[in-house]
Length: 113
Length: 118
Image (cartoon, each protein chain N blue to C red):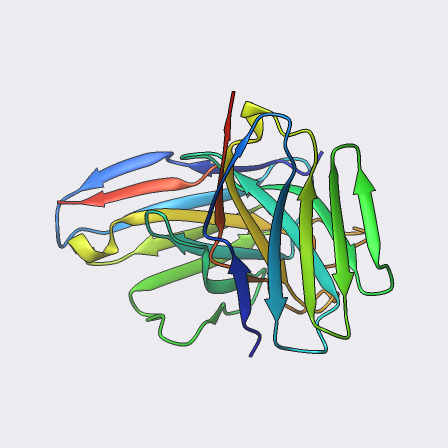
């Protein structure tokens, strides 16, 4: 089955800096890669996703890049703000209605004012 | 759109009792829902896939007789933790997949249920 590795487990940055979280996956058939943000005690919220026919996708301060050859994808957050502080999870799956998501272990991002 | 609710948000029960958790899709019909368990400071672990009108598909290592799943309608799936023990204490989160999504595997999560077994 699919295995997703995520690094780092914790990341501390100063407000205004950029943050990068990296994930690798094992199943070359995976072609859907969402990122979720989870605040303490709350539900995971989808913040951005990418499919394997796209190498990069951007939404305001958030971007995701995908290297399908190397089987890794990354989340980039620019101009970080304290409200970006949360746990971020990457996931991978087939982009079909019959597949499941495999999550990374999560990265706790702390943005200090 | 794509709102998923869960009830209750938290529950405390005695060891040996059973607890039912409901997951509802409020503004769409979901033929497939998912149940996850999340221990403190850990990732989401898929327990089972709930399919409307048919049996749930359980992940390896998850006891189907202990975690009963019923998906009786297109907007409701229930997870019953039978004979709960302290080690079952966890955050249980459901998700649902809205139909017609551009990404077929896009999932929207419920707010979670914090289960504490004494």
